[in-house]
Length: 256
Ligand code: ADP
Ligand code: MG
View 1 (tube, rainbow, N blue to C red):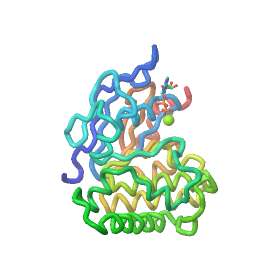
View 2 (cartoon, protein in one colour; view 1 turned 120 degrees about the vertical axis):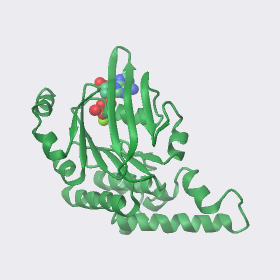
View 3 (tube, rainbow, N blue to C red; view 1 turned 90 degrees about the horizontal axis):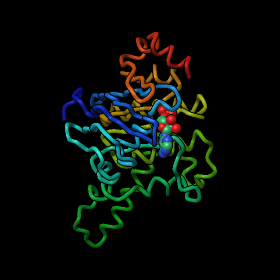
View 4 (spheres, rainbow, N blue to C red; view 1 turned 180 degrees about the vertical axis):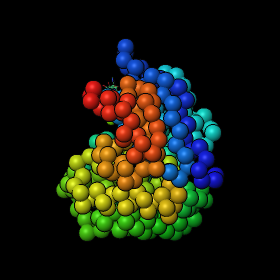
């Protein structure tokens, strides 16, 4: 698919929890090859949007389109198989396993099939495992986590766990990555590593990113486009500098 076209389209998305409309007719577009920021006050519906896109929850109305295909209501593994990968606001890691093992435990599907094919020959399993390990070591290098490869995940700092979550996403070779507050609790040094890794993945592999983030410095540095949501709807969208100065955005945050 050519860059710059629509990768993800959200049309009139609605999600109710009892009487609450967490998403209330949300509209948004993410262009292929961009890093798009998703900002908005707490409770605006940002994480719920990720849950609807990735099949963790089923929306009550509206549509999710990926490269023009309607993927609304698909199961998480079906969405994943189509190249969408995500992180969670609170990292979901295997605490007792090492950093390297966490990376090597990619959900089967994408990576495995591509490397080995469905016709497993003698030796193929071992070769596949070697390929996964090589890939994991590359990812660790990119994220500057190599020296922690054999440390249990539970020994990592909050910021390092965020990096490891990004690493797990990268193992799957996704086309579209959804990051839920990657910078939360991350110190400035790790933040630079994180931002550089995201930029490199976009440039070298053409990965498209949709990033929920509160840190406006990170958003301004990283994002081509920012979408602001409030109370389950799109408030505005545009380049970071324009959005930052938008009075409606300032007001939405003051009301938080
Ligand atoms: P954000 O990520 O923008 O901070 P969320 O998407 O987490 O916001 O939440 C949006 C609204 O939906 C909030 O009011 C939240 O309390 C509510 N909500 C989210 N998930 C659930 C759930 N599983 N059950 C009930 N209410 C929920
Ligand atoms: Mg959230």
